Every structure is written in C-alpha cells, then in structure tokens.
Image 1 (tube, protein in one colour):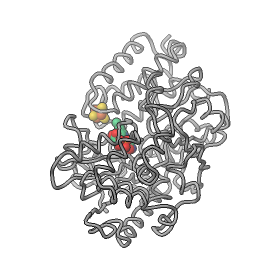
Image 2 (image 1 turned 90 degrees about the vertical axis):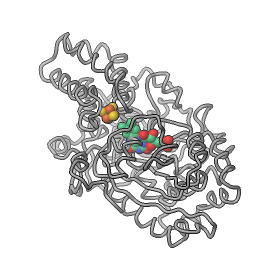
Image 3 (image 1 turned 30 degrees about the vertical axis):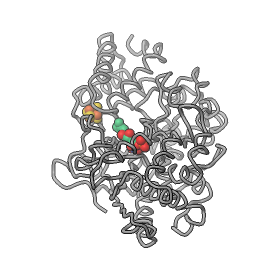
Length: 488
Ligand SMILES: Cc1cc2nc3c(=O)[nH]c(=O)nc-3n(C[C@H](O)[C@H](O)[C@H](O)COP(=O)(O)O)c2cc1C
Ligand code: SF4
C-alpha cells in the first residue's frame, strides 16, 4: 500500500498527509446543515486545522471520528443490487461472500468471454454512479478497442462529495463485490493491473480493503491464473492524503502516478490514454459493485429496474437532518418528495428550505420542485444532478448567504488552482458572502459575484469549477428574493 506523497511540490498539495485523524470533527456540508444540533462540536470543527470535509458519517452529523454508530440501511427497490449483503450485515470474508452469491458474475463473464461481458454491461444501460453518469459500457468498449498489452482498472473510492457515504459501506461491508467488479472490468477490457484509491478519512474501509485484497490473493480471485484460468490480475491499494480534487478522475490518475494531482486537459480521454498514457477504466465504487449483479442476473433484469435513461437502482445517503437518516437503495423514478417524506420521514427539526442532492457541485432543489423524479435527465432539467446520491436537507436555520459562504469556502479550499476563476473567484465569493453575513453588501458585490459565476462556468477545466457555477446559478434562480435582501 503506498501513499501518493513523495516530492515536496506533490506533498504540499495534500492537506492531511500524516495527520492524526483519530479525534477530528467533520466540517462537511451535512455537518454544516445539522450544526445547530451540537453547536459545540461544530465550533470545534470550524476552528480545527487542517479542515476535515467528510468522514462518511453524515447520518450522525455533526460527525466525529470517534462515532462508531451504523446508519439505518434499507432496500426499497424491487431487487437489492448493491445493498443485498450490506443490509444483511455484510460479507467480510471471501467464504461469506461466495456463500451469498459472490463470484458467480466473474465465472459467468469468463464462461462467455470479454465481448459478451461488455455487451451485458451495455445492455444493462448502467451509468456511472460517481457523479457524471457516463455510460459504463461505452467506456469499457473504448478501452477494449485499444490494442496495447497493458491496461488499467481504477476503482474510485475517494468519495469526497460531502453528504455521501455508500462507498465507505461497500468497502467496509462488501469489499469482495468491489474486487469482483474490478476483476470483471479487467477481464472485459484486457486489463492486467488495478488500483483501488480510497480516502484517508475512512480508516475502517482501509483496514477492511487491505484484509480483503490479501484474502482475494490467497483465494485465487486475484493474482496469476485467476480462478485457475489464463487471466491474471492484481490490485494495489492506494490511500489518499486529503484532497477532494483527487476524486476527479484525471487528478486521481496524476495522484496514483505520484504527480501533483491537478486535473488533465481532455481529450484525450482516460479510457484511451490514462495511467502512464495507457488505456484506463476509472469507475466509481458503487458502479463497480453493480457489475457482478448484472453478470449474475443478466442485463435485462437490471434494465427492468428504474426508468428510461436511468436504469437500475441508486443508493441514497440521507443525512442527519432527516428523521430517518441512512442508506436507501431505490429505483430511479422515485420522486424527491418520496425521498424526503417516505424514506427520510421528513425533517427532524425545522422546515425544509432546500435539498442538496449529489453534493455541492450541482444545483440545490427548492421545496416547490420536490415532485421531480430522480433520474439523470429529470434532475438536469431542473439544474440539479443525481451526483453520487448524497441527500442533504437544509432547514430555515441555514440562510442562503450562510450556505453560499460554506460551499464556496469548501470550493476555495479544494481548488487545484489551475484555472483563475476557480483559484481566485471561489475565494472572492466566499469573502463577499462573509461580508453579507457580517454587515451586508451593495450592488457592486451583487454584480461581482455573478460575474465570477459566469467566469467559473466558462473557464473551468474540470467539474469542480463548473459544478460550483451550477450551484450558484440555482441560488440565483430559486432564491432571488433572499439574495436581493443580501445586497440591499
Ligand atoms: C471535483 C470532482 C470530484 C470528484 N470526486 C469523485 C469521487 O470522490 N468519487 C467518484 O467516483 N467520482 C468522483 N468524481 C467523478 C470522476 O471524475 C469520474 O467521473 C468517476 O469516478 C467515473 O466513474 P463512474 O463512471 O463509475 O461514475 C469527481 C469529479 C469531480 C469534478
Ligand atoms: S476548475 Fe478548479 S479544480 Fe478544476 S482544474 Fe480548474 S482550478 Fe482545478
């Protein structure tokens, strides 16, 4: 297991290299939304250096590293694709995994061959669960089509979006599903080596993954001649060192290569030119956890779940302002109202002011749009996103300037610094709204922040800058009255 920190110019990028995380308090957006429940802890988080933006315990926000509670975990879809074993307490050994259906998907893939395996993933219409929603089959086919001897498969478990914690529970409770998903991907595209990149804020996940990789090697799920076939594949565990930007796929690849993890210009796309210039599949942990189920039950069974354009299930991570926070597996097509009222049981405290679905790099949904259905196109149509499925509710104790200042403070902290509007503009917006909260602001600031948002939208190299612009645009669109009061 290596840490992506060597040269000084690389090391300076990360905020948590060698930090002691055993007693930290979280400053992420879910904790911010729930801060009034335990103001003392929140104040401790605000004063803490370095900042910690997500411990994956958003169901217990404001969260501390010492909290060992487990969230509510429920399957609300017709089939349990991702939560099957997790909801039943987990499969922590290879034996337990195999007893509960594990490795059937990989065996099925190997029996039918790489082409049929890719065809299954295409037929399932599986789309990436890490945020961008790109068709997984298209990505795999592009990597498979490039005829070079070495290709890579990378599992993205950086899970930086504050509010989401499913990847943490996949790693802790169903790690072999992840390894099997990676092995199927590698078999399908002709990959020989994999990397599993996990955030350092998840010590329990790191320990479980280490153990699982060792057991997978002794059980012939990894190594030379996987399951006694001619296929060889192994996986290295890489632990992050504190950087949200490292979840962005090209920054992630730079991090694995030991470079300063800034975003790369695209094209070329990573499926053709990724790690060390070679074809690379980067998939989110939840995406990979769906793969064994699809191979085991067939593409049609998967595509029967959900709605056109958004097939299958999605794991939602509901945060602690709901009466029933926790992990829920739902089919696409469920309405946001059902998520808030039926799954979440409404708010534990206060009245809903807005819903952040999929993290801070997307539009916030005002209460009057709660009848929108969860789907990639449906959420896009209202300027929001499925993202990674974190669901954060805000009540009236969070004002719009509070929220804008918090989100842009996070953006400024995590910017990789290559694009000027993102490096300087995010900090400027944070300052403007800090000023609003202190003493108000005038027309000049109202114009200035909107100009910065336009620049972010037009001149950002990666989704961090454009996503923050989308968040800001939703504020301008849906909360204009409150904004006018800020700049009176
Ligand atoms: C700033 C930023 C952070 C991201 N963080 C993550 C992350 O933590 N985990 C993840 O899977 N994808 C993350 N993504 C999306 C990845 O770039 C990429 O689209 C994804 O890993 C591809 O896998 P998928 O197709 O299975 O979703 C992030 C994107 C951006 C712009
Ligand atoms: S938008 Fe921000 S995070 Fe993304 S490449 Fe530009 S400076 Fe870096």
